[in-house]
Amino acid sequence: MTTFSELTKQEYRVLELVAKGWRNSKIASELCISIRTVETHLYHIFDKLSVSSRTEAALYMVQASSLFNSEVRRIPDDSLVYSRIP
Image (tube, rainbow, N blue to C red; front, side, top):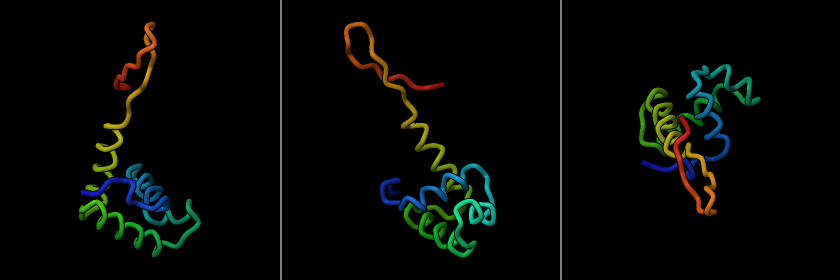
């Protein structure tokens, strides 16, 4: 599987909206692009992430995002502590 860094900004934005459950027509309207362009972005996303459906792509997004969803906080001795955000 590929990392999100290989997705273009527009592909990443499309993937975010797919993960929210948006349909292609709503994504196209939101991003001011055609439905066909959304479909093309999805094709590239599926290829780059080695997935074959919107559901798999959305699940990949959710799982990967949860890995990076940590908070950095300082404790009194000024060292960093990483904790997961609930």
